[in-house]
Length: 309
Ligand SMILES: C[S@@+](CC[C@H](N)C(=O)[O-])C[C@H]1O[C@@H](n2cnc3c(N)ncnc32)[C@H](O)[C@@H]1O
Image (cartoon, rainbow, N blue to C red; front, side, top):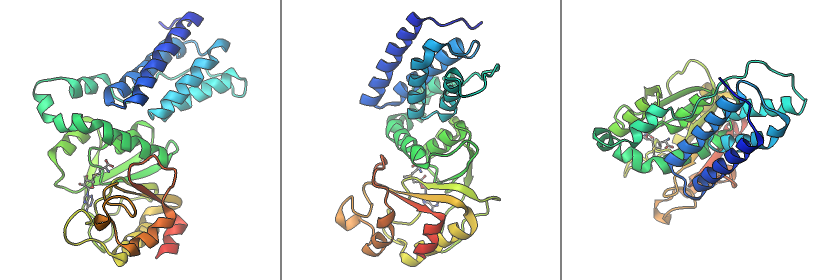
């Protein structure tokens, strides 16, 4: 049974939540993300879902919005924004406020953190979870998808971006090559990411996904063979790929995001490992300068794709 919140409780939550968030910002790690996410869920479900907010709750709603956006759990922050609008009189009152859920359900958090055989199985996953999750989180923010957008996650790996897209209400499709490391399969399974098997090949069209996409994201992409010693894509290969995306995969208002890793970008990483000068000339104008993504992020609108090839 929900009960009415009091000023004293709000102050408590504000303080607890802020210290959890500050700890998360200072040292980003998965268990801190879980903690903040879980605290937000508890505060909303217990204190707001049943009764709605009261005038004195504006501050805490603003905090919940800020932190949920940061996680990112934009489905929750949209609910909090609506509540704030109601409170400020710019939206109609609602009587059925939804319960929200955590990004990581409890049993999954326990599975990741527990010892025993799972620790062996998920050791790599657990160790690298922070940096991979952080990357996916920043890529999610760079895409900034609306609820219901159709998004393709290319080379999903551990499945974090696909997962964030799904839990934030996107119509998500992801794929990876058939022989990814087992740890990626286990992670996708744990996160309920439905990934398809497909390998991008030089000068061959992508598979038919049925419908076009609002966004296509290629985080830390490897499909251009750059990390392998042979078969690196040249300009003609990239042009084939971009043309295929333009013609067959991307909606007219959509955009393609290409994430190049810090090690092998255009102007980052060791000079002898960087992508060629010809490719740099093509992509450099489209590098997002204020991106929080490690490495270089290239954003191409549908019309940019046409301009390039
Ligand atoms: C560095 S991981 C990045 C994973 C994830 N996108 C991320 O941002 O954390 C690169 C991913 O690309 C996938 N990949 C490599 N070559 C590919 C190809 N030819 N077609 C599709 N995916 C490929 C790998 O299996 C791997 O999962």
